Length: 316
Image (cartoon, rainbow, N blue to C red; front, side):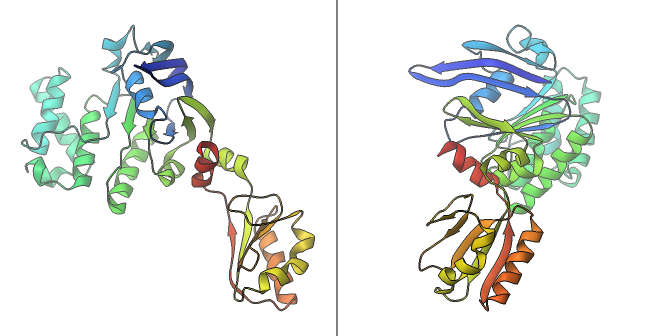
């Protein structure tokens, strides 16, 4: 549904995109991650026909983003970083206005506005001025506006920036419903847990290039497998545990803040990490070994790699 090959874009002396490739299947969610300035917003703006690329090509819903831009705009929705709604109008009037801009008849724009207000839990607030809305309500109204013509492809640029946890969850639920109905979603986000919850595919950008792409699980496996993390009650026990845990840990390493193939420990500290190739079974073996050695622990947990670690590994 979204295909890009070798996209390039330059702003004066800055090369924002240096050959971006994308391939997003219909009815899936693709999350674009990357530090500020990596090219996420530029990529979205090109795919949404708001910028012309300096090189490469892209198609969305089977239409070329440059050659077929006018036709494509009727098949996509876009919600930018800031809610593009008029604070001096009511929620209902905002949606009716967007409907008319999409050349819907007055009656159809009105009925579509009612449908979307109901769908996004804004029916009771539909007659209120948008300036009285909370941040989460404005974001939901903005999302509703991007869906006036029920587009098969939706672009969202940092959709939950600035929202409280409850509003974020509500927006996530709304997006999942859209995808279940067949919408293809491409979103940029700075919240890695958001990509982890929503995305079928994650593309990490760095300095205008694709640094890595794959499912969240695939990217986590690149960083490292499951690990057992132990916090000891007494600092001296970390060193004493080496004898009990050494046989199951592989090569030993010194202080570390990232994944390791062997046992990682802090000399004089209270924390030890070691690989868990068998997941929960490894955790059980560690617990038994520590108990047999009479070593008390404050905390013992199975820890899986996170997208935060993937992000830092790929972009640091």
